[in-house]
Length: 208
Image (cartoon, rainbow, N blue to C red; front, side, top):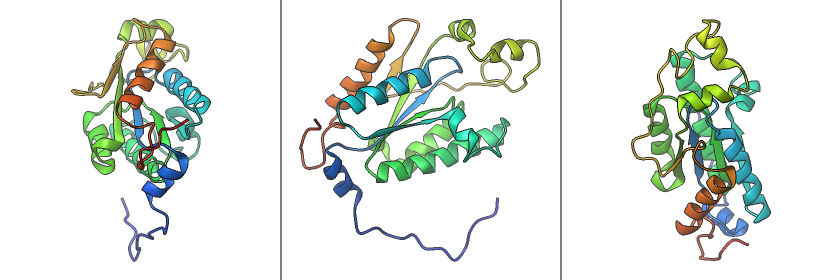
């Protein structure tokens, strides 16, 4: 990979803490990880709507959506998957600096890639949400028919079939969508954010 030279980071006159105070809440990344069909995007979108209803500034970065633009030149090899996560980690870091609660919905199968994003952001700004839905349930949903194609050998390197998924060891939140309804999953995440002060600005002012 080529690396840019003769560049200098431009420091803003407005700090992350000032942006958080303006918005009335802290910023962080809610990193949803799990198998295809586990419910990552569904939960992330529902949480975003719930945050919007509370006047919280948030945005969902979805795996498929990002591949339409920023990462359209990447495939699904192990190397491309790592680069995919590295890029979205850097984008997430910018969103967090902007004061936004950022929700990412990516399979992100490799533990080292997720840990690297955590290291770039800092422990308090990376909330790993393991959507631990059983493979059999994910296959039953198969709304994109990807598992069926992988079973037939029409897709290779598919996570959970012929490519590995490395589950988080210590996620902040674990959700099994086969065991609880969507509303309960959303409430579980909102409760965590409230209990850990993410819905309060650095000056102690609670979000609306």
